[in-house]
Image 1 (cartoon, rainbow, N blue to C red):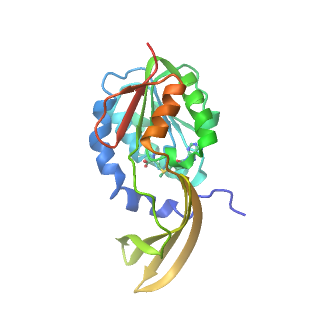
Image 2: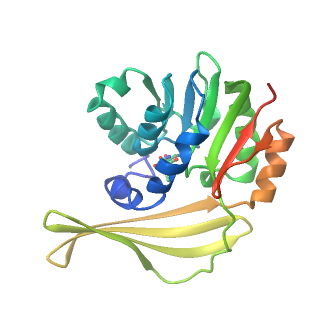
Image 3: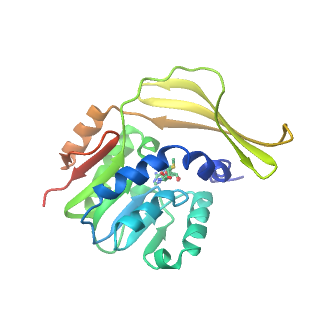
Length: 238
Ligand SMILES: C[S@@+](CC[C@H](N)C(=O)[O-])C[C@H]1O[C@@H](n2cnc3c(N)ncnc32)[C@H](O)[C@@H]1O
């Protein structure tokens, strides 16, 4: 039995996301970390695409937290290829609700991760993150309101040539219940048009409105700060 729910997605991850949210975050995140010198926690670091951006934007220590063994393995390979960054990135193999670092940090960054948390876990998440931040510390994440999806058929999401093979990702919305959306993802590799590998994953994500998130964060003691469209910055009192 494979306990890592993301193992089928890992080989496809950089192909898809280097072409998706990551270029936007490369542009929008660095100014939001301006002045941060005393440590950053990155929640859900994935394969390290955003860890690299944080490392280029801040001079201090980074705690890159990633529960998936597959994703974490790619992250560590990325760090192994960059000894300068490796010296100041500590990789934590746990989920966000177990975050605990030696000294409070100046910023928590969470890119394309929040949808993994159902409402009850988010209430705990904000408390956990607030405990890890210094007074005046900031929480930075990406979020935008999106139309409620409609269950439908399997649709292509991306297709990438790797040598003689084609890596294809397709997705289908299976069901919607309030803020929770259950989707099916199919990961295929083709050789000369013939499928030589196929994996399927069904997962549920949670998409509260920005209004709901704002209410939760205020309840947890955070204060809103201006940020570009698609990004959110919240501060603890100084
Ligand atoms: C879409 S990926 C984003 C990865 C990276 N932040 C990026 O933007 O490239 C979501 C990541 O969140 C991680 N994740 C899911 N649930 C989590 C949790 N409870 N705590 C921390 N990370 C979690 C997953 O393992 C996955 O690596």
